Length: 317
Image (cartoon, rainbow, N blue to C red; front, top):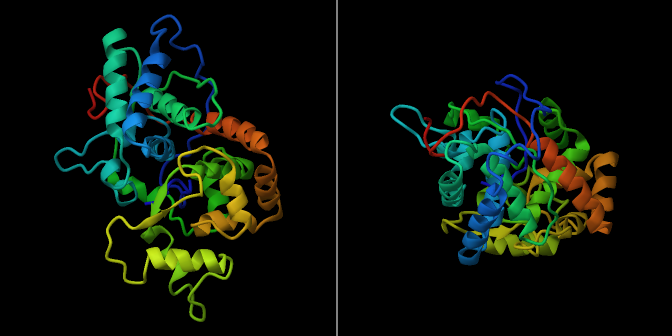
């Protein structure tokens, strides 16, 4: 999650958020019937110019939902003495905010003051997956935009070094299961990670080993070549799976071969239940896609304290 989402949180500093049922897939059917077409067009246009957009939008949505619920707080700009979430250390590498801005502008031209930025972000994440060859689904809508965004809250976002018990605790706090964890980790089908997020596995792993023994030796060698111990190349890193712009189940196949980047990925093989799901998803793309869709709907339905329909996604009204 600088890595794409490992989706984990330390012990709660916030009230627990959980999925709610107030959302509806036809929420805007009368008030903004062409909403989804406008959002899809904005995502498509951006993808033509930048192949990293889908991974960026999916990660942005995850990072939004895991802090204060899916309330678009990740989109707010820092102002005055308040440093916003997007400027917190784990979010510095988030990008493609302009896609949400462009979608919002198109939607406001059709339906002024009706659609929340949080809903536009949720729809954009769905489109990012679908337009990358993955599944599509009806996104429940009706989220409200939050007014609070603090960089300090990003401490709740994952370190890619987390183990399975930390992951489990974090997910259960959000009303999500271990099955959701394994399915949502498949978001790592898209994207790129900087060296800093997996350096711990390929250099000075522990007091006696330089390299994590669970990683494929040949894979470790290739990563060490790209990311030397004292790496000075700012944007050095590696793709999260072998088909980084295609949403598929290659992530799970590579995980079973010891070719995952993060400790948090590898941790999915450390319990019988999660390992069985990894194996299932590696065997069956359709099983993965079905599980991913259900888990995305649950995750994107986590609501916080959103109160308004923001007119500019970067600023409170």
